[in-house]
Length: 218
Image (tube, rainbow, N blue to C red; front, side, top):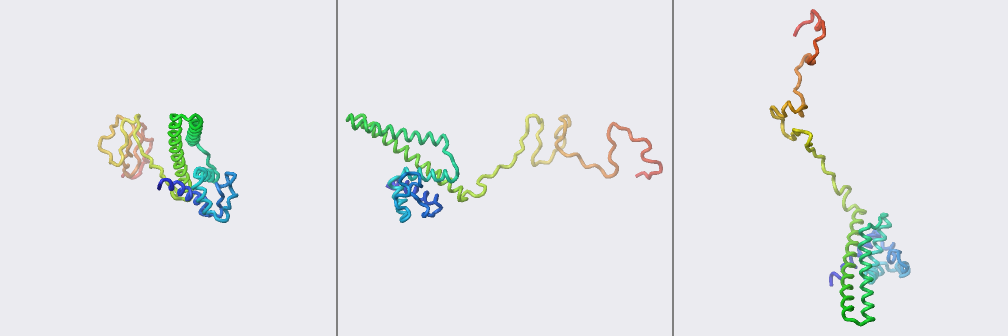
């Protein structure tokens, strides 16, 4: 019994929230059906919305979906189209089996029509529940319920490559003799140079007359 009323109650709350809790903006079926604006919504919008969600539950869910799609400029995905199309086809097949069972009077066809009707109702309720969940998530994003940054980008991590025979250490001081000099360029900074004149470049002789005569030696 509770499950029979939970769907319409959720549809009522979602429609009211979609209207920013301003019921003066309410129109029956959100203005997407011929009955919209002809049910005296302006005089008692709360009662009209309650009547809509209980008597026309499917239309109330679909109307809230259309309203949010128009507000956020959201298109229906191919997956949603497949699910909704499957729901409609199953309902049509169940209806056809019911009509055939009524005309022919066969017990087997009548039982098959009842099974198809139960399956169609299960799929219908499941799809409506999924739609209402989508409505709530979209309005949570609209109202800032997720915060300014719901997910943070993970920090950059350094990984060794296969072309590096000795990967750099992370968080550990270099040990003596590591990495070996035979493996090319070291990953660690060179030792500090002593104060005074910079060392002569290897392979080049010192320039003639340097240091000049009479220059005090250190």
